[in-house]
Length: 278
Length: 260
Image (cartoon, rainbow over all chains, first blue to last red):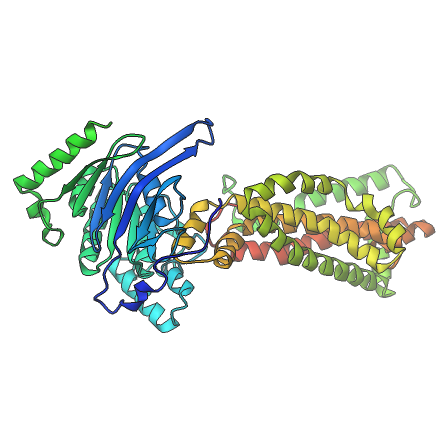
């Protein structure tokens, strides 16, 4: 776990303009390649090969692809949790060298802390930023309401359902107010009904805030429902196979608009592209 | 938890049963076989010895002396061992380097280093303190270190992406995450430390429960010897119940973590 705690990007930008008109950072992925040695088999795995990608400021980008196609490696490289063996990532022009609070992550596995209550988990980023208690409480309260966690503020994670835990994780990342939010199959372990609710919530929050969001999933319906653009990745070594614009703007997505034929056709196209890779 | 048939208060008192059995066996052996007081004291004789020792002020003096030594040793072991364990646990390389080293010293018991300490420091308080510290320290370091290794790496990753530095990670992830193991380490450390302390007191002779037991052999007072042994065990149970169990209840149980 060699990891540099130095952060070269975004230390101050996200707070400076948090009064409302802030813009999420623009992420540039340039010729990204990554190789690693599989601990079990000892084989060298080429997870990513020459990935070029731009995530526009304020954009909601979803990434789909078969299992093991390097989606998570791509996300981790942007987060600064993986040091790529080739190419680089930059955020608003600054090269990413390590994790930082300008790029929040919602992890696939459960990453909220079992020894903190819901309230203190959500407040964790704000505590690190040394936000005064009063403001902290306000912001935590806002996300508790938004995520439907009222009444569970003082519960510990083991007392919550899977869906609620994941909502705490999403709230924690959002409350810390990062410029860029990276989400790695955050709803994969959640039951189908809860997942739909969480997707709608996420869509709603994302249209209110202006963060740049990258959302990884293996679920095509989820990808087309949430994304402004959808990236389809090839199987390993992961490359970008296609980049598609969603025909309906994010703000207009409802159950009704989703039923439109052009949307159904779009979903089918993405599905087809993914199928070719499985 | 499959033994849920019995109500809680009954379960909590079940620990008395094996003690009652062993006392029963003791009484039977002593009286049915007419064992003389020179070979085995009766439970009543032990009680009388304990009463006398208390009355003379010897027992309270020696007990408080031993407990004081144990307290100092345990606090020092925790204060030194937990930070070292946390630091070592942070890196896989450190664990690979130090795990066999710590295991080595875990097997060289405190009693085995007593002769060396006596050569260096004489029959002094220092010798006793060092032997407790040494004995308690190794399990604390070892368990803290392995405890840190069991924490999912995603917790520290998550903290790093929230802007947390190394100190945040140690305070908010490693320390609470390893706490279950740390408590196990403290339990072992204090238990081993208690044994080493008694041995040290016997050899060094500067007062304490160990010294009291050892000294009683000179008068061939089996009542005193057995009373001392019983008090040793009973005190450890009390320490465990009053000090360590509440720490677990307040933290690990509340967080819904498994005990290691």
